[in-house]
Amino acid sequence: MSLKNITILVTGSSGFIGANVVKRIFKDYDGAVVIGLDNMNDYYDVALKKYRLAEIEEAQKNSSCTYKFFKADLADKGTINQIFEEYKPDIVVNLAAQAGVRYSIENPQAYIDSNIIGFYNILEASRHYPVEHLVYASSSSVYGGNKKVPFSVDDMVDNPVSLYAATKKSNELLAHAYSKLYNIPSTGLRFFTVYGPAGRPDMAYFGFTNKLVKGETIKIFNYGNCRRDFTYVDDIVEGVVRVMKKPPEKKNGEDGLPLPPYAVYNIGGGQPENLLDFVQILSEELVRAGVLPSDYDFEAHKELVPMQPGDVPVTYADASALERDFGFKPTIDLRTGLRHFAEWYKDFYMGESNK
Ligand SMILES: NC(=O)c1ccc[n+]([C@@H]2O[C@H](COP(=O)([O-])OP(=O)(O)OC[C@H]3O[C@@H](n4cnc5c(N)ncnc54)[C@H](O)[C@@H]3O)[C@@H](O)[C@H]2O)c1
Image 1 (cartoon, rainbow, N blue to C red):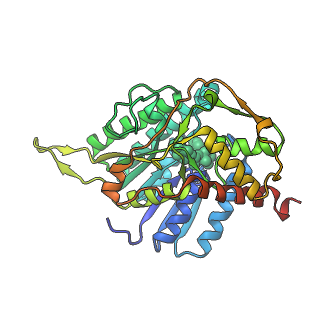
Image 2 (cartoon, rainbow, N blue to C red; image 1 turned 90 degrees about the horizontal axis):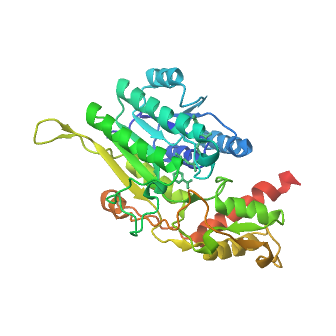
Image 3 (tube, protein in one colour; image 1 turned 60 degrees about the horizontal axis):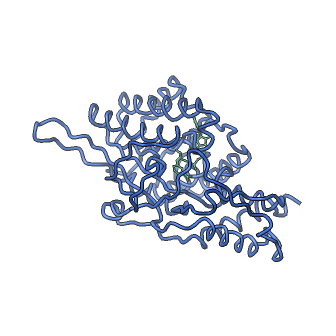
């Protein structure tokens, strides 16, 4: 597709992944009009969302792109339609969602509003103001308790173990129907445990750090017998921008009717890490960055506890389809990624401006 003077809508643009995608678009897409949309909700500390917004503003100054931000809710159909009508985006990257597996047990409504109604509004708008490519975030959680590893996009994913996972799987189904009915090219990306600087405080690496800094005890679930396929945010962003440029092809089937231009890919590191090893690396990097003192007694701040509802014992991406179709696979190892996180954390929470 032509990338000249393109208009790109990124929802969830003040979010962890969204903000990084916007900054990367400024670098890759000369002269693009970038529309950011986020409701700036307080699911976690809004200061982080404001920090990311400020980073976006700064990055925009050094680019040839135009940037416009809307503080708006995906569930507000009227506003979504207005934005599509006015800007007619060529590419939509839908990253806004209520994230988090555990919170979906506490506040299911937030998931239905943002992930189901909100996603439906994006699909409807993409139908009435046709887009060249709709890219949207799915999640590794759709694999539930899948026993077969690594997880492949060809595996059956009909057994979600959380409402969050069910909403993400529903997004894939809805996208398929809209791709088939209205010939809307769509690509779903199943992200695997994304981490990095200015990430999400509800995720283990960030939450553990906050607790350790306060001298509290961290809970390691399933007695540490969990493996997670961590993916550094820059690898996710690389995958997203490559995918954005290449929508699934529109073609007709043997019956002469359009085949749905629809695809789903995993984006994951493909190297699951045991939770205890992950905590070990994190603690070493926190000491190295000066977030924690070198004599910190980690053993005294660790508690091994049973599995929680909604959690899964392992996530492990088979990202070979992404590599085959886009010539890319994640490369950033856990220690390097956690090093960037620890250095950012030190600067953000303990830097000069906080003294
Ligand atoms: N981070 C991960 O490990 C991970 C893994 C799998 C999938 N995902 C998915 O990737 C996407 C981005 O995740 P993230 O980690 O950046 O999360 P995030 O919470 O940092 O970003 C999501 C953003 O969307 C916004 N938002 C939520 N509901 C909204 C609504 N109704 N209207 C407008 N804005 C709304 C939030 O304010 C937030 O800024 C999400 O769809 C998430 O489900 C993330």
